[in-house]
Image 1 (cartoon, rainbow, N blue to C red):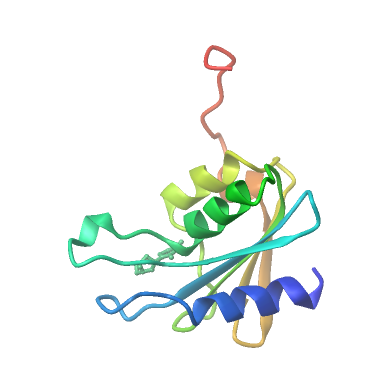
Image 2 (tube, protein in one colour):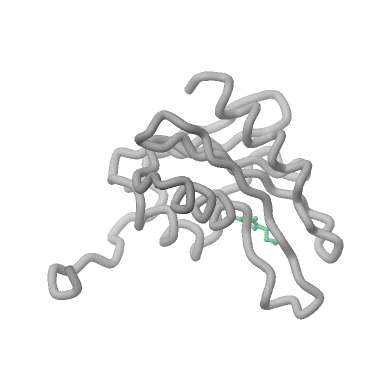
Length: 130
Ligand code: THU
């Protein structure tokens, strides 16, 4: 992974709105258009209404006109590496391939690289729904 994606994820983390958990998370997606889309977690006083960094980045990507995640980096300052939550794995999978790389980072760089298939094995798939 080139350093720019890591830097983008780390930079995005600074925009987290996490007054309740005090657990800022940043995500950065390199999309098929070559651009980087970033996101941070955005919490809410009504706790279930908050959301993770990854869907913020996905929303940015979609509204930027891109549809495919080529690679994605995730970072949380309070964890040596931050595995995306179950819901985020499903959301990432919607716009990824089985080989898409997911980089789990700390403040210094990538600590672990996984593929989408390793991150979400035996995922929900059906031709019935298209
Ligand atoms: N969080 C993320 O942003 N991404 C994840 O994959 C795991 C959890 C956020 C949600 C919440 O704002 C905070 O981390 C603590 O759970």
